[in-house]
Amino acid sequence: MSGNTLFLRLEGPMQAWGNQESKFVIRRTTDAPTKSGVLGLLCAAMGVPRVEASRERLPRLVALQMAVRCDRPGIHWWDYHTVGAGMRMRTAEGGMKADTMLTRREYLCDASFLVVLQGDPPVIEELAGALRNPVWPLYLGRKCCPVSRPVAEAESVTCSDLLSALAFLPWRPRYEGDEVPESVDCLFDWVPTAQESEAPPETEVWYDVPISFEPPSHRPRFVSRRQLQLGRDGQVETGEPTQRRTPRPPRPRANYGNTQYRRVRQERLDRDKHLCVFCKSSATTVQHVTYRHAGGDEQIEELRSLCRLCHDAVTMIEYGLGMGLDRINPEEQRWRDTIIRKRDEIIRFRSLETRRRRLAAEEVE
Ligand SMILES: [Zn+2]
Image (cartoon, rainbow, N blue to C red; front, side, top):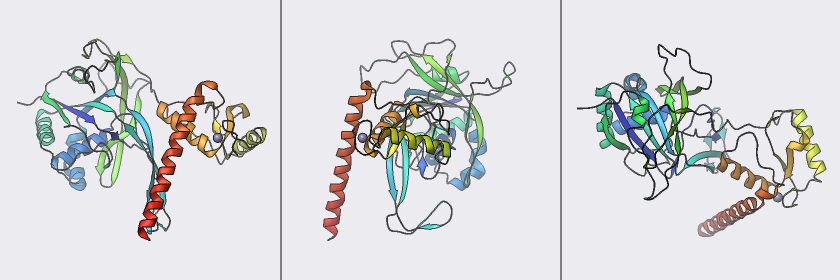
């Protein structure tokens, strides 16, 4: 006898859930699994190819309601990725490119999510069976992100709504004795009700409901973010969840085509005598201390000149911390040791890469 709720545990060394922001050369991840990623994983478990899934399965699957509990949010990490050195490769624009294509890919490392899907019991029953005995390998959003434990978290049961489904299983520690956090972030499908027919203003719009996997096309859904309080035993405490605002605003960027920005950037470099404010090497770029006026209204005080190495280090630290509009000021004493450590890490990694490449070249000779 099957219930109306399916429990999935999405856990692995790396996860990557792309959304509409994830463009070809810069592939970002959202901070929680997307509906299209989760339904794709279920189709893999059933062994349904993309075209068939799009034609026959998706209409029934998208009708399921989804909620995610972020038991461990993970940290953001970037991969510098090269594709096809020296081989002629087709580009997204349809042309051919002879040199290496560079892409940057973002991952969530060490994250753990409890995903619940709720709907028609026969559909839930079929999915539960597929997860117990998956036809194809399951991955967490990107093929290089395998799961590290069985995805089926528990037998399906009947729950009255998504909230009670998320409260059904306790928070899962990674190691025995891990301290239980006070609360966990959750993301719910928001659906209109008789009492609430319009989505509240803080509701987010995610373009991740698959209409078709091949060719890929998506429609939007409303996502509501909440916080659930945990007891000391890791059980979710009942009661209304508290509203949660988006913790990671979309990453702002400078408008490099803007002449006003170019002028301020040049002024900053001149004022810093074209030297990195952190290590005094020659500066090739500037750091935004804040993105509050990014887009061309930057003030000179909001920028600092940096060399490439210090800039990479600062950027990686910012990503790791999931910083919003206000970023790192490399002149502040409190960042000094962190930046030095990150610089060392990058230098060590790069010299290892150089050695590897030299050895590979010697082998060829
Ligand atoms: Zn520097």
